[in-house]
Image (cartoon, rainbow over all chains, first blue to last red; front, side, top):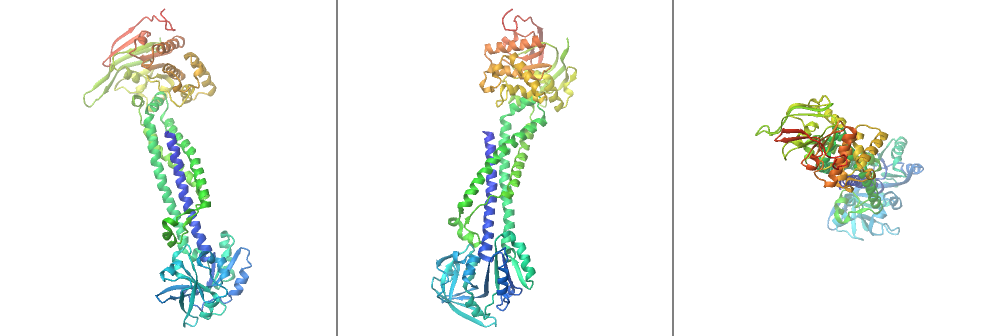
Length: 390
Length: 239
């Protein structure tokens, strides 16, 4: 029974540790995926001065030829262009500062899955003009509905204030509520016309086939276009990169807490074991088992119980993470708003942390071995003559 | 005859700081090779304490104990454990077999501690289980054995390390008459055939009458030490 308790403690401790790592890995992988595939792309190219004040005049001058060239890179999956300006969205009831994104719908659907985020309306209609896609949070804030009329105001490339009326063609909702509140999408040709920048644009978004090619392609683009600002998603979204590091630390802290609890479980159970077997230990010492051998005996018992419990924990966590990796853990009913306000998907797909398994196993075994030292020392302090009387 | 145990003026005092209680009071004991000795006396007379002292399980507060010329009171803890392993066999009142091990493993355990080879262990186990008459119980766990059988395994375990002598604390206290007689037969046979020295504490008249020397303790002191003619043969029947 006692052995079973230790084996189960180890199995549950390992399971809990691996699940924490798996959930964190899943959350972060999902966040990175959202950043890359729904927000920034892998790499973006801008005029070097554009991001300082978002001046409409700082376009990528020879943007079309750059797009044509980089589309030939085998590592690149898709390229999209955006015209971007800061402006004001006004309705009869109020106004809100926003970022107006002029996009080519077909490209944007590939680069940021804009069409997949739409949960009301059908998106841009090729037969209509002056349509705008707004985020759900902005729509709620500005009390806008499908077909509502609004006015977008911005300054053009000659610093003249310019305004144009649009109708809501769709309301979208992404995993990042703050971005939904800030970004509206209109056709690139219409924004370019407002800004007076012809066929130019401000941003080239690059999506790669594989994340691993990021550094290589980034370097290539930097070398090829030194007069433009080429940045990867980690630079564009530093908070995500920081979050990855923070989450790693957080997962280790939670892991340490789990191991701490495991240690107390083992200490308690082994102490009970020593107490239960006081007479047996006394007998072994009386018959000639020396203290070193007794110490090794307690250590070996814990070691074997640990390495028996560990595969059970490993197997269960592998099965559970495998199941939820396919089906997902849905948090939408518990904290959808909180999750999306931090830019996280409400469905978490835990990933088995293969790269951390050896380390986790090592720490579980180490914790178990360290935990049994105190009970072993207690056993060593027993005097055979007293122990035999118990 | 060769002296196996020589205890000089040994005392063991409990509760030294308040009202001292002499569990053993200035006892001198001399045991020779091949003796079959019973320590008798009322409860609290010091029988178990004396066995613990000469077995090196406890240390006297005064006096010294020599086993085959080695002063065990001068040995350090680990040296004493090693000395016990090589020189002294123990049989306890409540058998004290390890419940998760088989009868064979319980006996082999001591030989493993001594570093005996596997072949040597197997030979010795065969001999010992033959002597205690439990050749067919090698793979039985203690829970599958009767009290008498468990105590016989305990005797085999005590003899496994080929000790200088065996100390048995109330070995028949938990046994019925038949089992007690059987156990005494085995011990008497081993004493006779292998010159194995046995010292046992007991209340049991069935054991006392089988001993060749009876030492009586009262309040920690030896009050009588008598040799008696054993009227029993090794099979427990009157001669």
